[in-house]
Image 1 (spheres, helix red, strand yellow):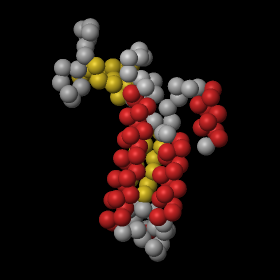
Image 2 (cartoon, helix red, strand yellow):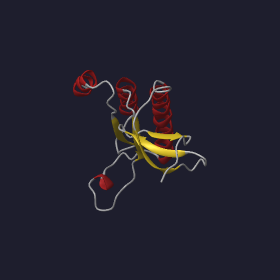
Image 3 (cartoon, helix red, strand yellow):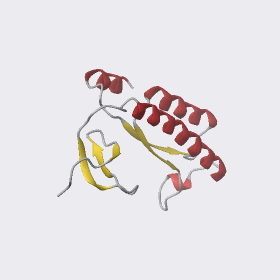
Image 4 (cartoon, one colour):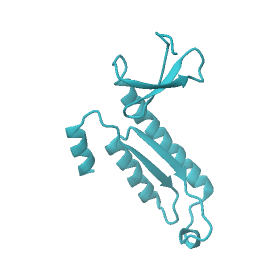
Length: 132
């Protein structure tokens, strides 16, 4: 956390993302609560999040205290809802700003272009020039 704080001091526009797996064998309610607290404190720009699932021939597959599938689903939903709110707040701060975007082509939304910023945020915008 200290390194991220230092990075943000040096580079306020840096984007920090993370990957989180919920429901690893033995994950308690307290463990999950600590994960939520960390996400709130760190305010990641984005997150890839997943439910734990056993993989054949791994040590974790043999571990006891598996988290119930329903509980894993609820935890994932809670985590993703929290992160969605954080991401929305961070993205709203960028409204009205200008930034360089690497144009990747036409958006699935139709009538728009899509691209990514230097911090990997997806941007959809109306074409104001002709692409060759």
